[in-house]
Image (tube, rainbow, N blue to C red; front, side, top):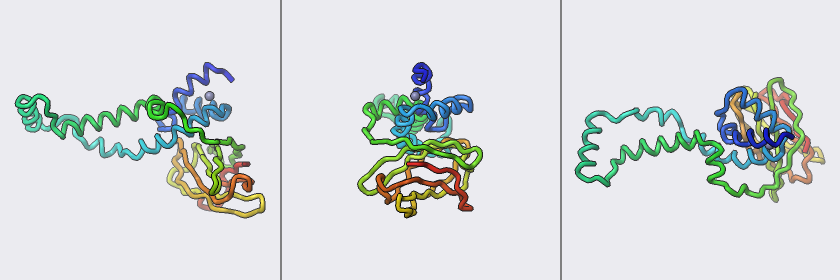
Length: 219
Ligand SMILES: [Zn+2]
């Protein structure tokens, strides 16, 4: 693999997880992820952070006015004149909102800042076969004492459609591993848990609302 490409695309993983890349960049990163286990593992560590950032509702931030009303501006100025060190709570709220936006834009930078030592999760890449057109996906599994976790990343799952995931055991047992909602072209990162132990798991399947298999993972 081209290490220059690896270095360049690795820096885009944060923005990738947040769905902030251009179509071209997104395609390049997705293609690179298919062949680079290091980047896939790194993406998995960024994922919880990206999820947390997505909980911040941009619509709420948008409702904050761009500038305070003139009368508030005046009262703030008056307060500042009277007591230079005092910051009006309203101002602080704006600054906080701006900081959240900056953090969102920072993407990977924040990922590194908060997690300089990526947790040593025993991620195991698995072979994913997509059946449905337009779906691109990679997956890793994590063995746990209580079962197996599937970290599923992908695009092309129909937006708004519900998908369910099952794990098939070597003994043929089928266990539910959870559900998710498709996000269309926006990258999706999803953790799915099943009660089948890693050693006893044979494969997993993602099915759509009509129970058609969308993809299979050989574990
Ligand atoms: Zn890479």
